[in-house]
Image (cartoon, rainbow, N blue to C red; front, side, top):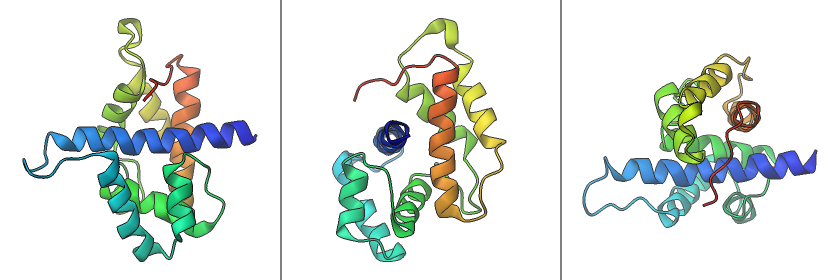
Length: 154
């Protein structure tokens, strides 16, 4: 179980890093989306969610969230990167691109990222956006595994 939790935490950080890269295309020339930028957003979200420095550090170190505020921190970051919309739903367009970027390229599995997101978009996510962020993160990891998509090492 803890291995799955660690994998899901790693996935979320990978998702955040990937969205940073995706965001670079739409960022203004002087705004570079980097892991540092993700850290900056996490610190903004810390203030908004009541998370602690330890919660931010836990997220940046790929560790699973234990406290509710740590889960809310992740939901906030996911929203800022448009992976989750303001109603707490998975953003299909951004999530598909994220899964593509997170998985090793395999032409035979070209449709798998959309299938992964379709499955996760359809889950009964908790109403609480903080818990929903963790549910989506776990679903994406499990569905990637089920579809034979290996995580790209970042």
